[in-house]
Each structure stands twice: as C-alpha cells, then as structure tokens.
Amino acid sequence: MSSRTLIRGGLVITAADEIHADVLIEDGRIAALAAGGSPAAEAWTAERTIDATGKYVIPGGVDVHTHMELPFGGTFASDTFETGTRAAAWGGTTTIVDFAVQSVGHTLREGLDAWHAKAEGNCAIDYGFHMIVSDVHQETLKEMDLLVEEGVTSFKQFMAYPGVFYSDDGQILRAMQRSAENGGLIMMHAENGIAIDVLVEQALARGETDPRYHGEVRKALLEAEATHRAIKLAQVAGAPLYVVHVSAMEAVAELARARDEGLNVFGETCPQYLFLSTDNLAEPDFEGAKYVCSTPLRPRQHQAKLWQGLRTNDLQVVSTDHCPFCFVGQKELGRGDFSKIPNGLPGVENRMDLLHQAVVDGHISRRRWIEIACATPARMFGMYPKKGTIAPGADADVVVYDPHAEQTLSAETHHMNVDYSAYEGKRITGRVETVLSRGEPVITEREFTGRAGHGVYTPRSTCQYLN
Image (tube, rainbow, N blue to C red; front, side):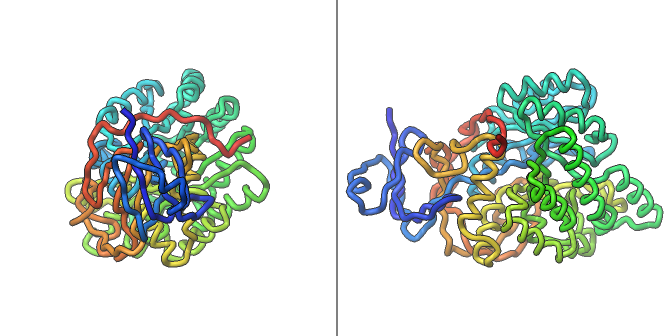
C-alpha cells in the first residue's frame, strides 16, 4: 500500500536554498517539491495533509555525537536508546550516530555487537554507529577494514583518559595510517590526558576539589596542543581528521591554520560551548557538577571565536556529545573530588532549538543553521542526500518548525531521562511542532506519536568531503 503525505504552505529551508514550496512524501521518501499554488502542487492528493503556513519545513536534525547508555566513571549514561531517541525526536533530530566502545582486551566486533544489542528494536529514530578504538594492534587494524566495508566508517580515538580510552601517539598514527588506506575517518578527542592527570593530582593535593577545578586543570592550551599534535600525526599518515567537541579558541586557531594549508581537517563544536561557560562550573553548593564535561566549558570569551569558526567554516558541525548523568546519585559521586564527577551533559533535545536561537540572535543564518545541524553532519559521515536535506529521493525526515513560538527550557518539560537541564530557565524563540521520520509522524503537533523500534540502523558510506 502506497502512503502519501503532503506538507503545504511552509518555507522549505535546506543548506542551499530557502523556497516557499509544498512537499510531497510517498512511501517514506520525498517524492517532489513544487511552488505552493502552482498547477503541479494543486494536483497533488494525499491521505495526510500538514498545514505548515507561517512555519519552516526543515530536514530532520542529524546529531553525529551521542552516548546513549555509555559506561563511564563507574556508572552509565542515564538515557537509554529508547529514551534518548525519543527526546531527540522531540527536539527535531531524526538521526543519531552513537559510539560503540571497544574495551581493552576485546575486539571491535564485540563492542559493535554489544551496541547493536542495546539499540535494536528500541530507537524511535534512525541511528548509526562510530567505533571507539581503545586497543590498537594488528587484529584491530584488520577489523577496521571490515567495519568500513559494512558501513561503520569512522573511528574515535582519545588523547585523554589514560587507563580507560587513551591511545598513545604510536597507536594513533597506526590507526590513521589504516584509515588513510580504507577510507575511514578518525575522530579525535584532543586533550593531553597525561599532562591533565598531573594537574588533577596537584589540584586535589592542594585541596581544590570543587567542580570548577575540573575546568581549571583541563587547560585550553592542552586542548590546543593535542589538536596540533593530532593534525600533524594525520598529516604524516596522509589521513583526514575530525576533531570532536572543540571548546577553546586556541584549538580553533589550530584547525583554521591546518585548513588554510589545505589539509583535510574538520572540527565540531557543541551547544554547551556556545551557550555555557566556566561561570556555570563555578555555581555554588556543588551545582557546578551539572556542567562537568570534557573538553570542559571555557571562559565566556571563547564563545565569540567558536561562533566565528562556524561562520568561516573552520568549524563545520554542531553535535551534542549527549552523555547525561543525573545530578542525584551520579554527578554526586564526585562530591569532595571533582575528578570523580561523571563527565557529560544532556543536550540531544536542545540542539536544534538553541541553534535556531543563534539565528534569532544573529550569530548564523537560517541556511547555515541547517548546514551545521543537518547537511554537513550527514555528508561528513556518509549519509547524504538520504539524510540531511529535503530533495526528491531523500528519506522523508522532515520537521515542521514554528519560528515564532516561545519556550523556556527546563527539566520539568524536557524528555531526556535526566533530572536537570543544562539550560534551566533559558527563554528561546522557536519550537518543533511536527516531526516525520521516513514519512512516519513521530511528533504530531507537540504530541509523541512514534514508537520504539521504528528507527532502523543506517550503514554509512565514507566521508563525502574527501576526494
């Protein structure tokens, strides 16, 4: 049975265009676009018609950095694939790419299988996986080739967290050399974890135990140094590089320099670095623990350079690094020792709205909003034009967005499975109204009409920015 949906009267915004058009959806895909009132559009009929007059019609968001159910610091991220993907849908995101974890002593395949088991049948929206590589040796390198062939085309390494995820420069170089051959993309957590551990130890010895010291020991210069080193290792390997959650202006400068040299180096930042700062980490009565993440929040003056990087394309993607831990019982593990606070913030539901607020505030244009939140992440990780745009043949992942509705972000009203909001009380303009995932309504006029298991696993091609 063919099913058709018609979205009438909206302003269709993609990374390339803004056009007043009606959108015809058939069997889960975009079938056609035509100017509203044109003979072609007037002739269309459908079982379901959505009135988008006065609204934006945008591609579903693509969040390429989430951590559902991640084990960390003796606990687990509080969102499951079911709760996390439902919250993502509420926020206008229709695809996530999460991180499967290789534990030291185990194979990539074991890690990937474990994450497939967590996600399968539980997701409200489509999903893919990156692979965290924690244990580089000959067998791991061979496995990387196999994973690329089956659509897991990106591998994350850590210059931070010695004893957990950490890779040394030799291991990083070997993985980069392999990705240069197999077409994979190395994603780097760029912080000098060895040096940071020394500063942590020294701070605790001085009795500096509050959450704000988390930001003070994870110095911006150590993010910049690691970013520089990662770029040079990638250059030696002849491999592309994607630096995750860039937070410091000094790290942006390293990326800009590399891109000016013509290197295939890409950068991602996150809403928390654009809207929050060390002022939050310094909140009294241990409230600052809510804002502990790595890379850490920076002093407010870094924000202007991040926005500038997004405008000049030295930063290409805004993802969330969604990794929520409840304040009660999880963040509290670090009372009296900031180094024991689980690192991570909730945000998968807030990204599209916060970036629309950035449009309202004049930081970015509407098309750039869609570019950094939908189109570029889909291209970067081999999902475009199936995901990330509204064009004939694309998956009908479509959001009807009300640019005039006002809302106040709050833990009382969000759908993430976490007991606080990093943006509590923030008033913003713009709100998701209706969300379709492959043509199926997941959010219908601010009601959840989706289901666990609708979302399907999405294998990916290699990075679409490389020759």
